[in-house]
Image (cartoon, rainbow, N blue to C red):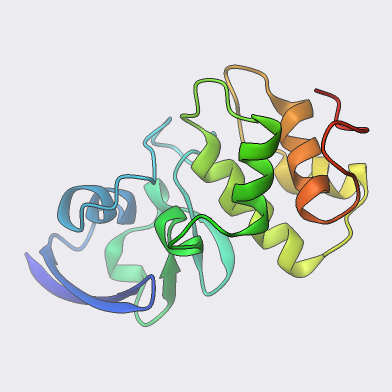
Length: 160
């Protein structure tokens, strides 16, 4: 066991875990930040996506020892009061069905919108590729991203 001090959602948090512990389990089991979900454990589904220095990262494949001083942002840290445009769009369009994959979807979409505030459908599809949704809400996810980007209004052009 080793002690690691992490910058999580703007706060310094110290954990005592094995160096090869995936960041996802540190977040969930040690820091009680359970919005980050376990999906596949091999970085293929995106349910565990968090931001490391603003870059969407699969936390199930990121050992705590590699995080260092990078800023970790989870779905809980995206907006404390749910006011992030993506969170609002998700609610307004009722994007989630079961909701399990949605934290990873939103975190990936947030990184996209930060880099490209007015993405095309192809930009969205490219950025979201690899984020799996067993309920197949992909058209609603795209509509939510477009609504958050101000490219559509609720109920129009959303593919819902």
